[in-house]
Amino acid sequence: MVDIAAMLYAVTFVIVLLVGVYFVTLGAMSLFAPAKARTFLLGFAGSAFKHYLELAIRLIVGGSILVQAPHLIYSDVFTLFGWILIGTTVCLLFIPWKWHRRFAEKAVSIAVGYLPIIGVASFALGTGLLACLIQSAAK
Image (cartoon, rainbow, N blue to C red):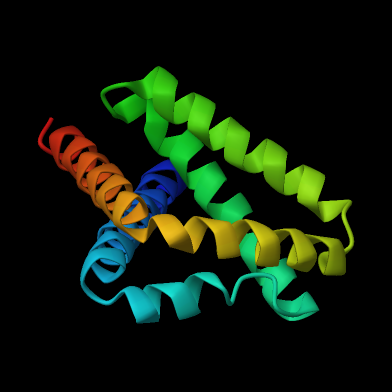
């Protein structure tokens, strides 16, 4: 018999684990390969496909964080973050992708000027998330 709850837990655990790895990688790239990080960050919302793919990934990640939050230390923080991610994604669903692209171009152009700060923050967020996951798995 397949235990759906256990499968959901395992799948969402892996998704949140990959999010942690993503943030650690983005942090390292921002600090040690800033040109690659800049190119990567400027690629968001570049087309309708990328826009909707980003929204789908955000919904999956937000939902996965909500499933994992009760098992993590600082569960209230993770629950809030999951709902913020889902809520902002739903808002983006009602915005034409070209508006999202224009906003992303302006915002990311400004943000890449702060790549060292983004790098440290991303690395800290990723390692913190991974530490929380490891702690929950050790229970």
